[in-house]
Structure formats: structure tokens, C-alpha cells
Image (cartoon, rainbow, N blue to C red):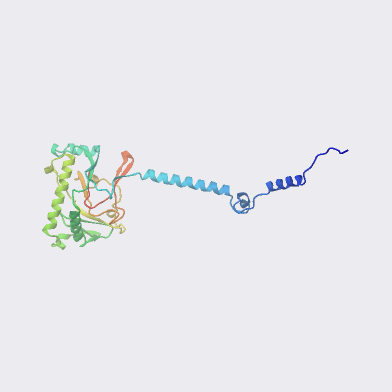
Length: 283
């Protein structure tokens, strides 16, 4: 008679023990975090926290910088304006009081700014640049800024000014002056038309000058042309300011963009210089 029994598979217990042992044995590969943390000076978990923290700090710094420098391009150097681009805004109280005291023909219909391409051709801009270079080559400021007033002949020379027409009376020809007057009158007409004032009541006031700005370190406060300023405070006789650019941003120089600080809009509007580009604004 055969007794009933439980049939056992050979090696079952040993197999379970072996599997259990394998589960508890950590992977000894090269990239096992738990194993490598034991021999590292800093754990992977701590390293991840540091990376995340550093990223958050960088993000906050960049965001803060962008808040302070909120630039909006009014016109880029790559653009060629087919028509006038302009912005209108309220006149400041002091400016408004002054213009209201003028005769009606001199009172502008608005305050603001505009920029134009094509009012002055590239050929005229090149010719005017040569006029400026001829005069500026006879002097030059000791700092980064030099000016030449074509009306009075005042020219930067070191830390002072000389009279170009006395030191070099034959530097310019009649054609040079004819070109200057032609361009000046065209800009004057554009200002009168935009602000709706009598052209005959609009006069070119002092100073009117060519300016050259270089990377030479500033020697005096007058060389520090980058400070915020209001033309009307510097030159009380001004009502409008016009700029004619004779060189191109990026191609001929870097930096030097014109920035309008619009505090009421919490934005800085930039204007890229371009040869022949005319920028006009209420002073």
C-alpha cells in the first residue's frame, strides 16, 4: 500500500531564496543613484534642488532687468518707412503755457514726435556727411563728443572751442552751404506741416550743429551725451528738435540709438539711426 504524500519540486526553496536575495541586492551599475550617492560629496537629490534654486534666481534677475528696460522699437534700421510714423501725446503744462502765450500762427495743434525716411536722399546724406567730416577734421573734442556749428563756426577743439571760419576760412564751398540750406528748409517745412503752424513763423534757432560721437572716454559732463535730459530745459529757446542721421546703426557703429523715455506708458521707445532718416519731436 502506498501512502499519499505531497510531491515536492526539487530546488523550489532554493529558488525562492535566490530570488529574494536578488531583490535586496542593489544594482551595482555605473549610474545607480543610490550607490553613487554613497561615494559622492553631494547627493543627487541635493544637486537637483540646487539646480532648481539657481534657475529660479536667474529667472527672477532676468525678469527684474526686463521690467527696468522695457524697450519698444519705434523704427528699426532694417526698415524703410514709406510714410511718416508719428505719435501724439499731451503737452506738458509748462510747455503748453508757453506756446499759448505765442501768437495763434505759432501755436502747434499737437505735441508729439514723428520720424521720416525719404525726406533726405541717401546721396544728400552722404554729401552732408562729407561736409561734417571736412569741418570736424580741423578739430575734435578731447572726450567722446565733438560738435560743429555751421552757422557760427564753433568747433570742438580739445577741451574748448575754436572758430573754424577764422582758422580755416576756405574749408567750405558755396555748394556745401547750398546743400545745407536746401535740406534745412525741407526739414523746416515737414515740421510746420506736421504741427500745423505757419512756416514763415518757424525759425532755426541756436545752436544748430553736426555732432560726432565716438567711443573715446568722456572728459567732461558735456561728453556724457547718454544722460536723460529735456531739450527745453537745456535750450529754453527750443520748441521743436529735429535730428538728421548721416550714418547707419549696426553698419557704421554700435550703440547710439535714440531713446524716448515714456514714463506714462512705462516704456522706452527706441529709434535706430539710418542715413537720411529725420526725427522730430516737441522739445
